[in-house]
Amino acid sequence: MASATIERIGEHEGRTVSVCGWLAGRRSSGKLHFLQVRDGTGTIQCVLSKADVPEETFTLADHLSQESSLEVTGVVRADARAPIGYELGVTDLHVVQRAAEYPITPKEHGVAFLLDHRHLWLRSNRQQAIMRVRAEVIRACREYLDGHGFLPFDAPILTPNACEGTTSLFAVPYFDETAYLTQSGQLYGEAGALAFGKVYVFGPTFRAEKSKTRRHLTEFWMIEPEMAFAGLDADMDLAEDFLVHVVRRVLERRAAELRVLERDTVPLARVEKPFPRITYAEALDLLRQKGFPVEWGADLGGDEETALSQSFDRPVMVHRYPVESKAFYMKADPADPRCALCVDVLAPEGYGEVIGGGQREDDAAVLEEKIRSHGLPLDAFGWYLDLRRYGSVPHAGFGMGIERCVTWLCGLHHVRETVPFPRMLERLRP
Ligand code: 4AD
Ligand code: MG
Image (cartoon, rainbow, N blue to C red; front, side, top):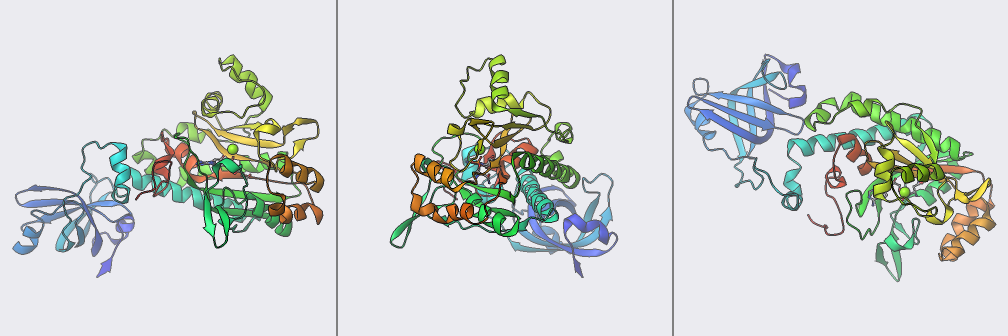
C-alpha cells in the first residue's frame, strides 16, 4: 500500500494510504476518535470509527498522548469542511512511540520557555510556517543569482582577520594561532568576482554582538553577490531586482504559510521597482523633520532606520553614508570623499536594514592606507591587496541577512524565530 505525504494526499483520493507522523491533537466522542496527525508537510484529521476497526485498534487511541509517533492507514476522503480538503477514514493504526507528557501545551508560554524548548517548539504551526518561508527565501535567492550568471562561491568560515570591524569578532584557537569566525564572506567573494566575474557567497556568518536587540543574532546566514566591472548604481539595480524577485516568489509559493502567520500581504505586494533612492544627507533631513536630532557622521541606529522605513511604502535605498561610519573596504565617492559609495536597503513597515553593500576600494595604495588607519594588521590583507595589483577593476556587491528578510516577510517582531536554533548574547542552547 502506498505511503503518502499530507501535502499531496489529494492525489490518493478514494484509495488506502498510510501516513507517518505525530499526534498534534485528539478529540473523542464515544464511538469516534478524531486524531490530528502532523507529518511535517501538513496536518490531516484521521477519523477512527468504532464500527470500522477492531476493538483493540480503537482502544489504542483512547489515551494517546500529544506528539506520540504514529503510522496511520486509511482511506483518503474529500471533505469540504477540512482545512486541507481531505480527511482519512482510518482502517489501521500503529503507535510507534507513546510520547511522554509534552511540555508545550496550547496555553500561552513565555518566549524564554519556548526558546529553551526550541527543539520541540519547531513542531508548532507558526514555527513550521516561518521555516518554510525561510526555505523559500533561500531558494528564491539562489534561483535569482543562479539565473543571472552568478557562480556559487563558498568562502571559509575560519578566517585570519576581521571584515566588519574588530569589536564583534569571535576568536577560536587554531593550532598555534588565533582564527576568527567569519563576519562576512565578502572579501573572499571579491577574489571570486575577479576570477569569475559574478559570484555569490552563501553561508553562516558570526558577530559577537554584545547588545540585545530584536534585529541581531550572533550567528546568521548571509547571501552575498559580488560583481566585477560594476559600481554603486549597478549594485543598487541588482539589490532592487533581487529583492523584488524574492518577495514575489514568497508571495506566490508561501501564501498558505503567510496566512498561518496572519501576515498582511498588501504591503508585500507593493514591493515593486523602482525603490526610492535617497542619500544619507537626505535621510538626515527626513529624520530631523521627524524630530530625530541626528548629526552628520554617525551610522543610523535601529530607531532611525525604523522611522525612515516607515516613511516609504516600499524598500528604500539609502546611499553614500559618511566614510567614517563604514568598513575599511568601502570606496570613497570621488564627487564627495566624505561619503562612501555604499548602500543600505531598508525594508518598509519599520523593519529596517535588510541589505548592506556598496562599491569596493579598487586602488591598492588607497586601500593599504585604509587598512592601516583602521588599525588592521596589514600582513593579513596581503592577498586582498593583490586583487588591486593584478587587474583591478571597479567592483561591488552586497549582503542580505536571511533572518532579517524572513522577519520582515513573516511580519515578526523579533529575528529569533527565523532560524531553527537562534544564537544570541544569552542563548547558546539548545
Ligand atoms: O551591513 P553588513 O554588516 O554588511 C556586510 O557584512 C558586508 N560585508 C556585506 C557585503 O557587502 N557583501 O551586513 C549585511 C546584512 C545586513 O544588512 C543584515 O541584513 C545582516 O547582514 N546582518 C545581520 N543579521 C542578523 N544579525 C546580525 N547581527 C546582523 N548583522 C548584519
Ligand atoms: Mg550594515
